[in-house]
Image (cartoon, rainbow, N blue to C red; front, top):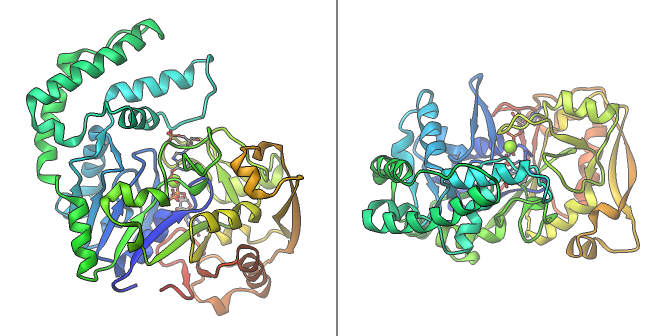
Length: 426
Ligand code: GDP
Ligand code: IMO
Ligand code: MG
């Protein structure tokens, strides 16, 4: 990986195990960058028996000699950021010294969170099952050109004017559409000014620093949050998050899209989803319950139970193609240990091709057709050499490679950093 620019992307509906994988490969990289999303992400890693969950900070931050960046495409709640920095600093040295935040980041303000939660609670519109973190509402302001950006906090009169205008807009909604109390301008303005002081030393030109690192042939990792099926353009709209995944790297950092050398996709050996939306392979039975319990499938951000189902190779192959994935890291294979048989969706009962199904948003109309694979009793848990995997697990992996058309270059066999098989990573 030396000198390479790598994009790491979840290939399903999030929670594929990205945090663990980033942490595993971070020892070989110089810089880790978040370029989209916000504190809706929950990336878990376990290092020396300590469990950490990162929401906004790049998951590589526990490594020494690494620079961590939040690019301009990230929506930043300063409340969440400072809380996370404080928590992380109890375990990790020099968190703030490693971190650089773009002045162009749009800020998540309390009114974004309030509106997100009010909408989710109201029964007048469809609910998405958001994380309630104000992500969609903050991105609405970004495209609506109303955002308060990080740089605005350092110019008092500009902040005053922008906040006055935007609060008028939100308070009208709170009072008239939801019968709520308005948000107090002075309280929020003062909070922004206090937060500005702490934010100031963290601000830097992220795009420029990444450009320089790439020119110096340093290895840079772009850490996608969420998963490709939650991409606002390519995913299962409207049951998506509000940012672009791999396609957002260029605009979310400020680099040319041609700079990416390698795209590593992360896929779970089964599928999970949090929140509403179509999920053809969902298992509403004892196997779904088994995967949920054994896989510990509880949301790292909201604590919600994740919906579970079999791996969907039809969707996976298509997502691999759409996102130009070069290699896959297959995670949580150990959760399948002990199952007599394992199903993979290899086709749909539908007169439409997958390209049309996603483009026309009719994924809720398909029925999966499964191929059965023999399970295994010999545990894969904790293995770190490919040769030690039993032959049925190897057959399963080979079949997935064939179905997706790209190699499985890494296999994660447990939640800890060292529970990893590396086969052929660049
Ligand atoms: P992320 O959002 O993609 O980073 O994934 P999450 O952290 O939300 O969820 C993944 C969960 O699975 C976490 O609890 C991880 O500790 C755990 N995990 C990651 N990889 C593996 C694995 O290979 N096996 C098992 N059993 N657990 C894993
Ligand atoms: P990581 O990075 C799983 C889902 C929410 C909801 C939809 C929109 O840990 O994989 P939002 O709050 O973003 O407007 O919610 O997207 N969602 C995630 N699901 N993992 C995540 O992040 C998610 N981030 C958002 O559950 O369905
Ligand atoms: Mg997660």
